[in-house]
Length: 227
Image (cartoon, rainbow, N blue to C red; front, side):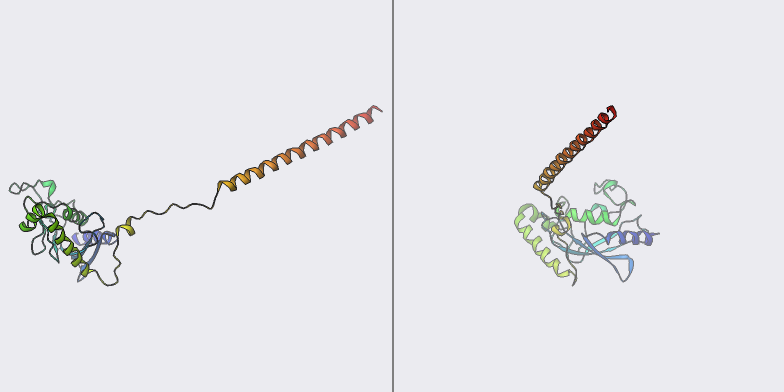
């Protein structure tokens, strides 16, 4: 059952513009995933962040494993690329960590849920219990220095963009279509209206003349009958 569920999710996510995925060695339980940040306001905008996702045989009852191939300078990313994020923690409430069951993995979660959570975490780091203490300290005390490290990671990530792959941008994905206008002007409408008015007047004039002629013929017939 797990393989069928994963294949369906794989096919659905393959249509999304914000991620680029493939199977590792045609194994549906191991995915190569690239997260593409399309939010222009994000420090990670334009990045191509590759990761590997591994799924247990009893998926979706147990969570997948997620690991960045290039470790990011981020409070919630371990030096080996693994993530410290609630949605990847086993189901159930954890009294020690203080995580409620609703924050952790559950069978109703899907791969898409994990990837969206990771994208959200990049810009909204949790610094209270960081996986990377130094990154957490720098984020709090030296924001500009932290941003520079993020910019460096984003630039490095672009080295992993496959040859021939067209990177989507905010403009290409969210660009609004220009409204289409017909070749129409009010002057044309007014001209047609004027033309229609003249035609109507001529038509009514012709009708009046016809009625007058018919009336004259009727009078002549009546006079002949009297004679």
